[in-house]
Image (cartoon, rainbow, N blue to C red):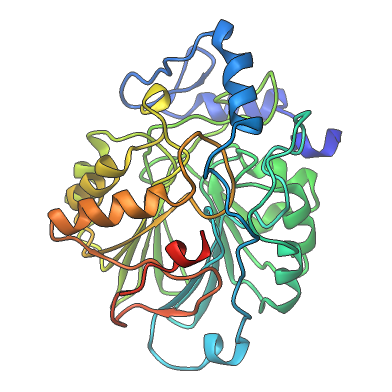
Amino acid sequence: MLKQFGGKITPELKKRYEQSPNWKDGCFQNLEETTMDVGLAEMPGMLWKMFFGKGNSIPDQNLPIESFDKSAFLEPDDAVKYIWYGHGVYLLRIAGKTILIDPMLGPDAAPIAPTKSKRFSENTLNLIDDFPQIDLMLLTHDHYDHLDYASIKKLLPKVKNYYVALGCGRHLEAWGAAKQSITEFDWWDTHTFDGLEITFTPSRHFSGRGLRDRAKSLWGGWVIKSSETSIFHTGDGGYGAHFKEIGERLGPFDLGFVECGQYNVRWQAIHMLPDEAVKAALDSGVKRATPYHWGGFKLAFHDWTEPADLFTAEAKKQNLEVTLPRLGQLMHLNQEPQKQSWWKVES
């Protein structure tokens, strides 16, 4: 159980974090005021509703995941390919490199909680067995639904390099990753990786895995640029002015992985509502969007299909091109958007 919490903050690490322009008053800060409208007195009732409430917040049956076709994924062509495994997990092939984003493939998004947040799909850790070597892993932040101990441990032999939010490196080291393989990023930091330009971008969120490390590591999104293609992963977070700045500084983007799911008006500041997610995509210059943060876990009260339904409806109004792949489906950047609402069949 203790290993789930990750690495400890040493005095040396704290000194390093304090050098960040985004560290103030003993922790990392958002660019704009960010609070949640949830009082302590309301928490027991909300948690009861979260874990035991009825409705369509979880699928009637486990969501299937398509089999991984390694040869098709690794085929030596110029096509940009990606696979979504539910919630925040993406496997990406770009410029001959394999990139894995937020590989939370475990069965439970709340492994230290007294009640489980069970995944909508079964045996997802076994997916790792068929994965190819991972040239680069990207981590947006250290919350349990994005950074999973069991997944990282199983992936260790396959991953060559880690690019992570500032402060997340201590968790990887505690779990066995080599220090020299880890590069930590502050907001707007850019590094070149085998011809790819990788930039860590701001988001409006928070971090922490225990009672004493809230906001003691950074959170954000990623921009991945090759000579031909530009991709933006928003990271988790609420809507804010940072999206326009990201678009102005780094856009436009051929593809956007846009957070949309596990939202509520009470925590709107840290998780966008669907109409805000579409606006964020447009603000940042995304040409085609695929929403994530749904299809994996129940971490809010809405129906499990609602993020997909509302995002696609709003995107249609705003003339934003959208694609929503099935779990495990191999997608090519330029293939025609999905016409079938597969989640309506599965629900």
